Image (cartoon, rainbow, N blue to C red; front, side, top):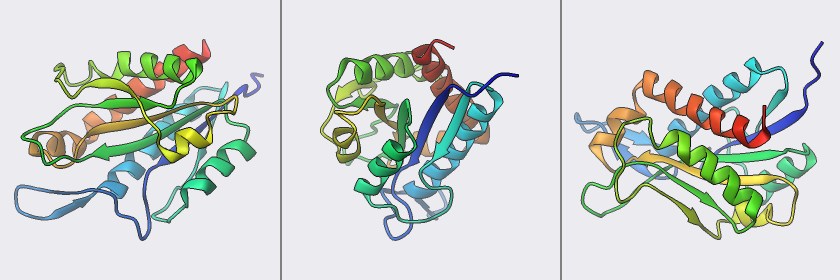
Length: 191
């Protein structure tokens, strides 16, 4: 019998009263970032369940608001080895697309970010000037900065770009992107 060895906190960004960024389908219907974040988080959690050495910890598994400091507290209380916050980006720039992976400042965070980015950057077969690893001072990352938990925030794509909206809304892309996140996590954990 294999005993679970690692805990992965999965944070679906925004939620409840906080919709995050807003995108639109070609027919004008609104798409809310919080909904995509939850879809991706649940798919990533499902993948973690397939690996007997990993226990996923969903910070939220419904459309609920969780304060940023509570996300950090939950991660610490659960003794997570890895924290992944999932988001969709938005920009008024002309046609931004692709993913970004953010980390706070620690080498462990940067290592995790690099391994995940290496995997997810190849999903759509295109690398743009927007696609990169970035050090950032986001509250959830900063809050975990002194902990042993390696923490990253992933912007899956730009909800403001019709090209990325089409991908974000595609179940096959969702599955593949989450699989690549998971492959990066497994490389980091060496499993």
